[in-house]
Length: 402
Image (cartoon, rainbow, N blue to C red; front, top):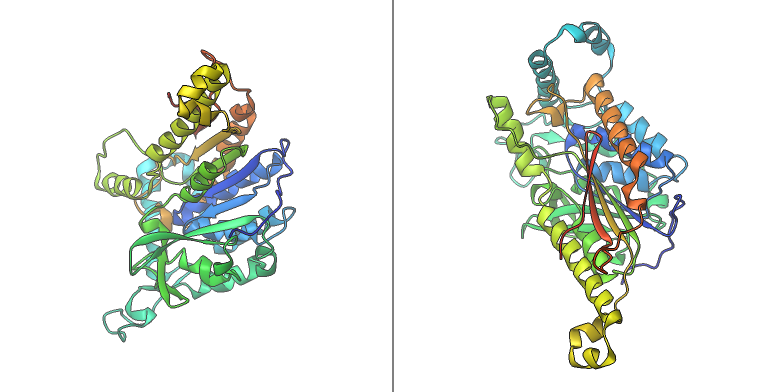
């Protein structure tokens, strides 16, 4: 049984249930910070946060701190795990004169540094070669030790606050023995008390990091199966269609219509395909399903008692209640300086740029706020389940046909 909870949302429209969905993507997760900062300034406080991989780290910090300090704590986390800016100060002077391909090489160099030496406060290479380590140990199943990340999170996540049910937190993991995606959920009594083990398990991407064993089962990063933790939100909305829900998806991997022309672009495109949101069809199906039910409800209200008595589907539709469902998907679109290893690039310039991009993209969405526009009536039908796509400040609103 889910734990009963109160809505936290103090947004300009507190009747909306606000969910925040954070995709995985390593160092690209700095984009989340900028987007969340813009949301916070607009007064939107999430009632539910779901995350995978770096999205779980960001989500745990947000859920593990009070609303008035959570964005500041997330900023401090990214400051700690970011490379010192000394070299960036020099590089910035020459940046206007450096072509994109050289910036891409610099990004790859920064990422290679993380792969070779680890990332301060985040990871460090294992001292023992995995092939020489004793089978069954963490050193034998991974190249890096993520205990530095655990120690960092100890400074930024208040577990007592995180376990107080507000907001709800769900983190995606892969159950190794079955390959299934599961969600550790603060609303599930079986997953309480929530600990840093649950967070670290969601970041344990093999073979970089060893799996985490919880209650006898071994878990890996949920992103290796599904990198977008939207399923639990859609499942609950399907069970409670009467809820007025506003879902902010912050995706770190987008799709590209341009064919790759270099090996680096091939590798980057491979990452996009592997980690980009595969939920397009699921979102479309969910919106169509909800709008179909709403259409049936509208038709049932206009039908005569004689018609309702003959058509059970319409009769059942009279008891169907629904609220608005708006899914706002903000997708990160990096500039031409990204490389295939950008998710390992923690350089100060790259992190700063991603934070700024996240803020700008979310602010562009908030400036227009299409989810606040009352639904239009067409042919007597009022579609209220809508997808808003945001990329580089451009917003496209889609209402699936029924």
